[in-house]
Length: 341
Image (cartoon, rainbow, N blue to C red; front, side, top):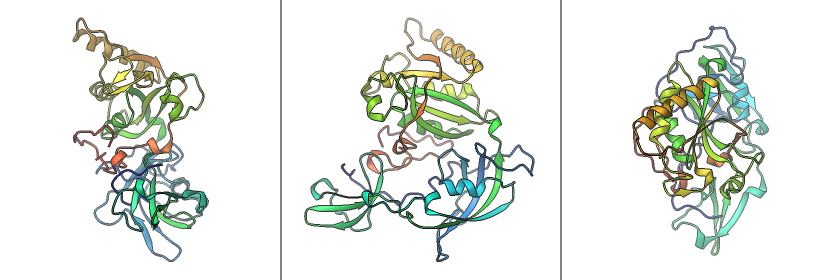
C-alpha cells in the first residue's frame, strides 16, 4: 500500500459538507417527522465528553448540512439523531462509538517502508493512501513510517445537538443511473447539478453478485461502472440529467472512454421506469439525427443488478482523488474536472 504524494486535511467529522449554499424548500407538513430516505438540511454541533466542540455547522459562515437519512453519508448515530424530528425541532443525543466511528482497531495501524512515503512527513500529518483511505502519521523511524487508519474519533462517545431546518420526503425523489466510463469524473459532474440530492457510484448490468472493484476491472463480471443519482424532479428534470451525461461521454466510442478501455467503461443509460426509458430513447434519437453517418453505441437498458461500489470510491474527486487535491462539488460549479484528481 503506497502513499500519494501530498497531504490531506482531517476528514469531515460527520462525513460530508453541504454541496450548495441554498436550502431546499420543504414540501411537507411542518409536523411530519423525518424518516429513512428523506432528504434533510440541519444545523448541528458535535461535542466530546469533556464538552469540547469537535465540529459545528454554526460558525465560519458554514451552510447547513444536507443529506439523505440512511444514505450512508453520515454516521449511523447522526441519522438516528435526526430521525423523528419535525421541521424546527431540536434533538440532543449521545452516540456510542459503535454508532459513530467504531472502536480503535489495532489492525488499522500499519507500517510502510519509509522509501515509499512522501518526503518531509511529520508526526500527525494527514496523508491519503493510493486506495483513497486517509491516515495519520503516528511515528517516523529510520526505515519505516507508522500510519493509523482509524478515524480520529474512533473509540469516542459523541454528543450531537441537531436542529432540523428543512425536509423533502423520499416519495418526491427519483433515481437515475448512467455509465460514462470511469465513474469518478461523472459523479463530480452530477454532484454539481442543482436539484441533485445525492450521488453514489457502483456497478450495474453484470452477472456476478456484489462484485469487487478488482473483479469488475478484470472485465469478467459484465458490469459497467455507473453513477446513480438521486434527484428532485421539481428542481431538475431527467432530460437535464441526460444533458449532463451526454456532455461527459463519447457516445460513439465502444467500451472505451478517454484512456480507459474495457467493457466496464461502456456508456449507458440504465432506466428506473418506463417513462425514463421512453424519454431516453427519444433523446438518443434526437442526438442521432444531429450525427448523420455516425453510429451511437451508448446502451439503453432497464437497470439490472446494481451494487454500490466500495466506500473509498464514493465522492472520490471531491474528497481529494489520487493527489489529495479536493475538487469543488458545489452546485453550479463549472471548474474543469481532473478525472483522476
